[in-house]
Length: 169
Ligand code: GDP
Ligand code: MG
Image (cartoon, rainbow, N blue to C red; front, side, top):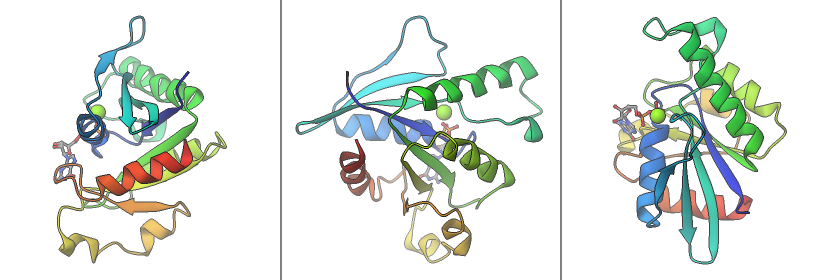
């Protein structure tokens, strides 16, 4: 079995964009696993001799921050998907939005992920230009996680992300 890395974070931070970007570059095939909800998507990453499975999740929605447009049942299902992905994974890529900054939900989700005791690497996404990187403030450091600024949209730092992932799987 290949090592498993799960992309986790609240909705809209760019997990799926990162997922597609990371797989495309390594010529991986994405597929829905039969028997699981479509919100947990698996793809095999190949980078030289390093191979691992990447899981995209629907996003962590915790009770304290309900999303008005989603039904409670749907939220529960998404959360369960994220939980199962964390359980399955050997390592977690925790994604936050570098433009929007941290929200209470990010902190709650991070706390939840931390409880898994698994290695966590944080990606501060949507850093599309150097002007944003200059704004990477103490708030991201305050999470106490190793992190790297990236832009899933522009591909910024994604080669380095792959190198990091190689190290922890
Ligand atoms: P998910 O809910 O975490 O899977 O987030 P998505 O991948 O669906 O992205 C949410 C939104 O953020 C979409 O409109 C994306 O186009 C946008 N997005 C994702 N990555 C980036 C990025 O690096 N820069 C910018 N500016 N937008 C991004
Ligand atoms: Mg998504």
